[in-house]
Length: 369
Ligand code: KG4
Ligand code: ZN
Image (cartoon, rainbow, N blue to C red; front, side, top):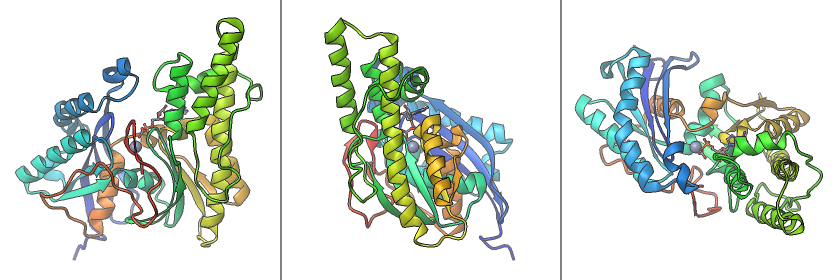
């Protein structure tokens, strides 16, 4: 008999918790590596660019308008119909509530019409399980989730078993990159723009703060960094009535170095805690948009190597928000027996690790921890 542990499963995943509308189809035959049959992402950068941040109402409306088309494209690209699916997985939080509700309602509609089972997925679990989707790595591994809305170390022990070792107590690094770009007149999203500028800059010219490094834990703080940068910028402007391209490049390089140093130091600490559990194949995995930063990636890779752990960074399209990670996390949960009813709630806040104390409140891009 074919049981859930050996069965081939094909899931549709939906993601709409922030500013990307996404749908994807993922399939896994028994214990084989999972396969992404399609992954469609409609970004909303243009929609929000005039406002300097994601406007929740605009995002929710765009998700509601785009989800159906996104699902159709995901199925068409996978060359499948709804009848070929085993279940529908959807991000049920944390995130901007209007967007999460759009996704949950769309998924419920599909399930009501087809009779397919529904599986709610925590967006953070989607990110955290991505190294299993891409590389099939075993539990337990250490995950650094570092994006525009999140920054946390997770000890991933199982599909539904996460321990948060620490995280930011204020801004997420991506948010700091975005604010830095805004302060220096660079384009949004700020990460790639700041990285490009930093390439021509001197990271040693300005010394930006590296908070909480004296503390023997895995918590971080990035909000002071933008204040220091603002002060530095205004000081230069006051001195010579403006900033040169070189000043800007040097500030970007100094800022990026500070973020990389903080992440490297705290990752060293998180690795110590993780390695104390004697994992068989120790692995540090990263996810989130900031993991795309080459300087930060190099710093993290060096720290992992130093500690004797493998370093794993999924391809960029799977580091940033996407629905393949939701379909895959849903697939793991479904295989484990998880099913949700039509009463599945959209949750603005939903910490992965319910036992760790809350680190922070709700940020510009939605709930963060
Ligand atoms: O994971 P993501 O697509 O969305 C969420 O925040 O959930 O991450 C987007 C964030 C933005 O803040 C963006 O500025 C940052 O990731 N980012 C980068 C780079 N590419 C994207 N930050 C630093 N360096 C980059 N190359
Ligand atoms: Zn995300």
